[in-house]
Length: 404
Image (cartoon, rainbow, N blue to C red; front, side):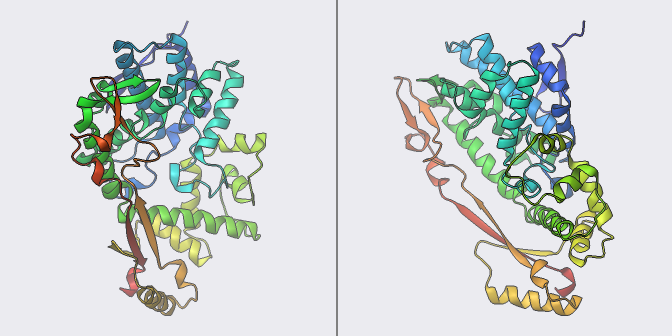
């Protein structure tokens, strides 16, 4: 008999336990193993060389933090059955199962109208059939349909275990210490009031530190100007490849990638769509990009060479939109230099917007000693919460280095 109650050594959290055999069976499934070949942070390793971790790492880490959160809640008197515990661990383990190549970057490009959460649900339902309905409750929790709301909030909210893991993990692998949040302190402050997730009032500063750490990680790492440009070019590569393929150009690519390049619309899914998707990963895309550097199509080749050789256009960042006249000047110079008339395809402006804390849509509640709960930003002890409820935007102008 195989011992399925394994212990996994994780560089971020230390030893991770697999407390239920069902979890081991799901981890061993090919659909889950595919996450080993899906980057957690897209092309961030082009800027932060250590950021080569995968969705597989993150899913295990989120499961570990979920287990810690459940242990905390049970110690505080919250009744959680073994079935509920197993189900929510399965739900968080599978919450990212629907991510495509390079995670968020290519969402809705190769597979139109297929958000990763929609795909995750599809694949969870497929696994549920294979495992004879053992994921029924997990799917309810994932969708927010389970009566006890706090289970879904632990999976997806403004202070869920998903965010707690990816912030700490991305901080660790990128080497950016500003994102290194104290996950154990925050988890130790978690509580439940009227079946909703709350934070004990004395944990307010840990929560504020977490919110600001997330804000810094977005501006310093996820929205880094070169990272934003790399992601933009990856999207342009796939859009261009799809356009050329649908217009009769036979581009070299893996069978899995060719399948999606040849599909004009995937709003209606079938079994073959899902099967092909579960076989598609970063390697399919990156191998194709390497081959397309030699494409006779100027734009496809330009985008691909920029990524493969890490030879990106020059970028300028601003807190305000760039003047249209400046952008037009760059486009004209580009057209003249390359003798083309589509300079607007390699000159442009990227906008990045962040709302650090959404106090209206998903407020974080503090549980006071008298049993009442208040919104985080309404606490007399808050220092930063009321100042991070405004949307911030930055603008990135990019143009070929040859014309600078």
